[in-house]
Length: 222
Length: 223
Image: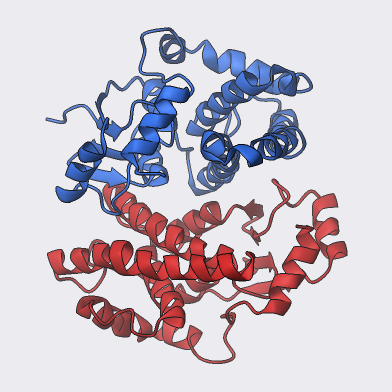
């Protein structure tokens, strides 16, 4: 009997959110333990559960996995969301590294000074509009298929939807020049497991507020 | 018939060097096309060769792969340097990501503003000595084997040894308290393909000097 995966992170999106998306899309139930105090974090450290003193941490299949990409790679392979061969996996990695780069700008922005935060978020929107979304629109146009890679639902589709929604929170009209991405967004959002995740009451976390930022700064002491 | 992989980057380490190390370790010959001017980069972008307008880019097996991690993952898989199963792969990924985090701090150092340089160097040394090196020494100690994962050479041994060379370039004393890491460095350096790569005249790149830094800034139009 396999226990549910257990996620250790702050009660917010940050670097854990992509992992929540993946598990939800795969229809995998999971538990979450929220790091809310410095003491909790120090206990995780003392217990030797954080290889590089960092969260996210996911306990799964007898492993204590840290490093977001390691966790995503394991889960994607385990739940058949990583392509059917090396070349498909390579494409999925290429695409998801791109969406991660974009989402990282937004994730890190909240920890900056108000002016730098505004600049970062504007930069993210600009990059989405001129670099990332055109690249994905082009891919969808080239093969005309429903999914980004191999005509099959994969991690790349999940991450792209997550990125689209994140940027839309900053600029609701961001998809106006990308008709295929608009259709993609609707299509992927309607996949039953994802539809469920997008509803209130799911493990999906809201955008970070000042309370979240203060908590993280306090726990991680920066 | 597959041609040799072709690496597109400037003539320096940056985010391409770990790919050079990995290909070399796997005994795979490769070609390099160096970006020397902003126009060279523009051409690649206008050709549609760079999915996100960025290098590194590696032409391999009919693909134009960008994103250093995607490139490394493909090469590692293809040449059996990625563990035997999903769990070994997960461990390799976890270790490799930690190495990449520290590696990236080191790569960015020449580009940081002069008034932040000392603080950054201190931070890098602190993380090296207190976070990263102890973690890997502990892994080696826990199983007592010659390689980090699965008692077999994998990509992460190569990545770690590459990093140890950089740490040594900055401050050899940082390695003093890590006997198992030192032994790993020696062992990996003595593998025939690595030995060859570590000799002068190989594809290995030196640290960025003033002139190289100026060229990089020009190519990427960094003010």
